[in-house]
Image (cartoon, rainbow, N blue to C red; front, side, top):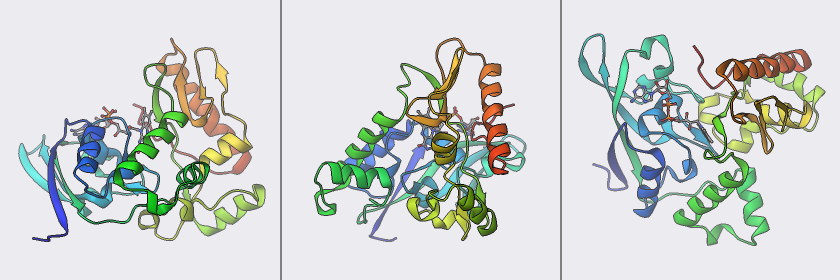
Length: 270
Ligand SMILES: Cc1cc2nc3c(=O)[nH]c(=O)nc-3n(C[C@H](O)[C@H](O)[C@H](O)COP(=O)(O)OP(=O)(O)OC[C@H]3O[C@@H](n4cnc5c(N)ncnc54)[C@H](O)[C@@H]3O)c2cc1C
């Protein structure tokens, strides 16, 4: 056993953010940047939740599943989960028989905080804080504050969060987009999760949909995009699934026409 780490077994039905809070309270590193993501621990590995420079896969050792075909309980190693950016085996045909029972995490007793994300840097600057002023608890507090100001209040709007995935493209496509949008940031470096990206470029689709195509705050009847974040589709009250799907399709089409790239929805529809 490694004295530097703590292994934690968490039931799939636990609330993700309760687990993050508990680990931060116990001074364990690894999950702090994933503070405030809604949902359960089981779903966190389905999506490989990701934000502010962290991905859940980096703290997952293995996942215990019940296979509804064989009726066996199996342990999938991190590698067998096929985690990539906001995706895993559990979102595929191959993984559709798995019901996640428990997730086995490895958290660190010592760690370095990841303060590299733009919003975090801005927060530190605006509040005259330096890296040395930030500990695990403060980090969580900052992230919850940033999220509260940027993301819709679930009590006010129906929403699934980000509706579209950032496309991952090769250098050639990246350079072509850079010609169309010279001020487009290189997201790969910004968010610092190169491990999933294998040297390719993650296009900051929010930058394109929001700043360049002007979709932020768009409203069509009961459905629209959030006024602080164009990737988020919100239901203003009585929108149907069809309304949401239609708006998403319009945005996908607009991106295709203006940039030539195909974007995928993060939300799975069937
Ligand atoms: C306001 C808001 C902000 C968000 N921010 C982020 C973010 O920053 N980063 C991010 O990555 N995501 C984000 N999301 C997306 C969402 O929080 C995650 O996808 C989360 O993991 C969903 O959890 P859930 O419990 O609601 O899952 P559900 O929507 O209930 O399920 C998601 C999928 O997982 C499957 N599933 C759930 N549990 C199990 C299980 N035990 N076994 C097998 N399959 C299972 C379901 O069948 C479904 O296909 C955000 C969403 C909202 C609404």
